[in-house]
Length: 638
Image (cartoon, rainbow, N blue to C red):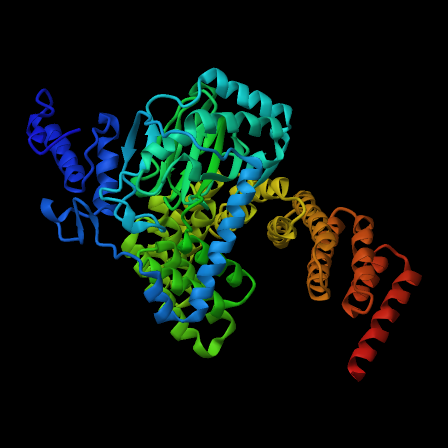
C-alpha cells in the first residue's frame, strides 16, 4: 500500500523525468482511492485508465459525488417505489422473487449448497471503477475494490490438471458454443457429471468459504451462495477469446486451470482498466467479483487455456435490477419494445447508475424508431440521451461507444458516428464487428488507406470474417490494386465458399480484367499480338464465367438469378469474342451457351448467327438469324 507521504520517496534512482512520470501516475491512483501497490510494468497503463474512468475523491481534490465511504447512492425503498410506480411494478418484483427462488432451487440440484464457515483467502483487490454493482449498490463501500484476485491458488496445479483430464474424458474438447460474437470450446458443467463432482468439492472446501469472506457486505454466510450457471471454457487459436461482457449473476468466478506456459496470450481483462492491463493467472488461481463488471477473455494465439466460469446467486437476496433488465431484453427480442422500455425504466428507478439498463433502453428506443417512422426522430433523440448517460457512467464502455456510432449513423451524423467507432476501437482493439464498422465509416469519409488498414485489423482478429475480406478487396480494387484485390477475394471464397458475395466479387474482378484485355484488341498491329491478348482475355473471362455459374447456384430469388444470368451472358459473349481472334470455332460454345441462357433475347441469337456465318455453316446461321427476327417482331408488338 502506498500513501501520500510515500509518494515523495519513490524512484530515487531514476532520472528526474521518469521520477516525475511515476509520481504523477501514483498520484492519479491515490486520488481515486486505489491504495494497492501496482507492479512497475503496469503502473502507466493503470494510471491512464484510472484518469479516464475513475473519479477523484472529494477529499483528494475532486467533486464527483464520491468520498472515502462511497459514491452517493440512495437506499432503495421498494415500498415507496411500488406506491409511485404502481401495481405492475410490485407484480414485477414478486415475479423476480419467484424466479429467484426457482433458480436457487435448481442450482442446488446440481451444485454444492451447504453451510460452512467463511475462510479469508489471500487476495489482491482491483477497483471496479466509479460505478457500483448493478444490484445492492448501496451496500458496497468506495473505492469499490471488489475485483479479487488470488495470491495463493484455491486449487493445486495437480488438481487443476485433474479437472482438465476429467473434462476431456467427458468430451469437453469436441464441443463448442457461441459466446457473444465468438465461438468458444467447452461445455456446461450441468452436463458433465464427473467434472461437476470435482468442482463441487472445490466449492465446498475452499471457493465458497473464500468468496463469503471477500464480500461480507452481501454474503450473509456460505449457505446462501448458489452456483447458478457454470461452464468449462477452452481457448485456443481457433476459439481465441470472448467479447467484452458482464456476467449473469450477483457475483462471478473465473478459475484458471491451465499452466501459463501451456498457451500464448490469454488472461482476463477488465475494460475500465484497458485491454493491456491483464489479470494473468496460473493454474489454480481465481478471480471473483460482482457480475456487472465488464470484462473479457483475452485472445489466445497458441496452445490451450482452460478455465471454469461460474455465475453466482445469493439465496437470501433477490437481484431485482438484473432480473428486470433480463426480462426487458427478452421482450425487446420478441418485438414488445414498449414493454421492454418499461422494465428498463423500472430497473433504473431502483439503480439510476445502471449503465447496462440505460444502454438496453436506448437500444429499445432505437429499434422502435426503425418500425414506427412517425416517432423516429423523437425516439432516436431519446435513445442518444440514454446512451450518453450510460457513457457518462462508464466512459470506456466499448459496446456503448459502438452503439453510439450505429445510432449517430441513423441520425445522419457521419462524422459523429466515425468518432464514436474510433473511440470504441481505442478501448477494444480486437472486436471484429467494431473494426469492420469503423472501416466502413472510414471509407465513407474518403480515408482509403485507413479503411484498408482497419479491414486488415479486423482480419487479423478473425481471418474468416468474410465481409471484411470482401470489402478490403473492393477497397483495393477501387484504388487500382487489382492483384491485391484478387488475393483477398480468393481468400474470401476459401473461407466462405457457400456465400454468393465472395464469388460475385471474384467474378466481377475477373470480368473487369477480361474487358480491359478485349479493349486492347483494337490497338493490335499484328495477328500474333491479337492472339496473345485474346488468350489473356479468354483466360480471365473463363474464370469470370465459372464464378458467375457458382453465384447462380448460390443466389435465391428470381430477381437475383435474372441479374446473375445477365452478367454471365455478358461474360460469355466477351469470352466468345476473345476466343474468335485465334479461331472462330473456339467461340461457338460460348455463344451457344449465351443463347441457351437467354432464349428470348434476340441479340443472343443474332450473335450466334454471326458465328455460324464465320464458320461457313449457312444453314445454322440462317436458322439463328430467323430466331432473332421472330423475337424482335414479338418484342415490337408488345
